[in-house]
Amino acid sequence: MKIQQPSRRRFLIQAAVAATALPLLASLARSPAEAQALKKLTADNAQAKALGYVDDASKSSNAAHKAGSLCSNCQFFTASTGACALFAGYSVNSKGWCSAWAKKA
Image (cartoon, rainbow, N blue to C red; front, side, top):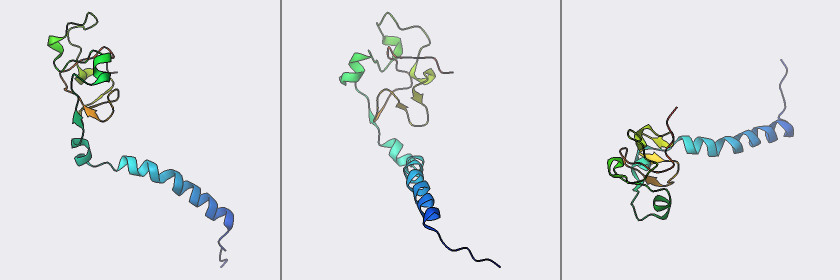
């Protein structure tokens, strides 16, 4: 039986793989409690103002708004957390709308 001696090359490869995988694993391990920690987006937020965000799409006076366009059917919205990719760190109302709305595929 041949016993394999540890090599420096093997160690360096394994260390590189571990260093690359740790941040990925950490991002995947987010708990539901962290999702609850998102602050609710308010109308006075600068990003919300710039994109014409409204908490209730039926009350939008923006000419670009089309009936049936809601955060809940936008590609940037994550239903499980209420998060929007455009408003990092904030949750949005699923019945809201903003000018960056794009139909979910």
